[in-house]
Image 1 (cartoon, one colour):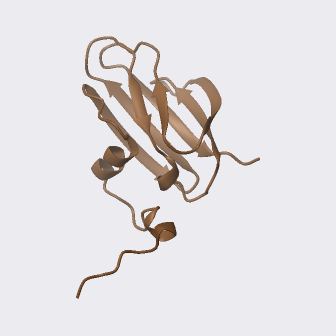
Image 2 (cartoon, one colour):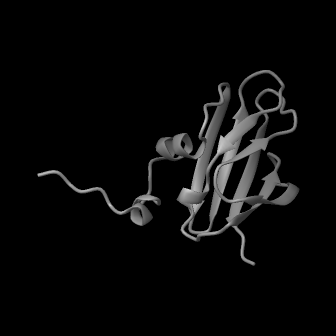
Length: 120
């Protein structure tokens, strides 16, 4: 006897933690060759770490954080950090599918982004 799929409101967000590999593959909605990516989720925020494994270049990352955040939001705060954890920028972006374009990243340079469900 087959299981019925859950209603869309339940199916939207994973109910149990996903292994690291599945989360990062689902977070990035389009492949970006030559990077190493890691991601972690807390209720209202998501941390994305990216290392450029190729030559110095700007990266374009297509992502969708909304399904992974327990707190629904129409906007997200996007905070960018360098490898030392220093805040580089902060902006508001729409929730849902989006594109992040990095400044030129050197080979093996790592950057981090924190996406936080915006409140008000």
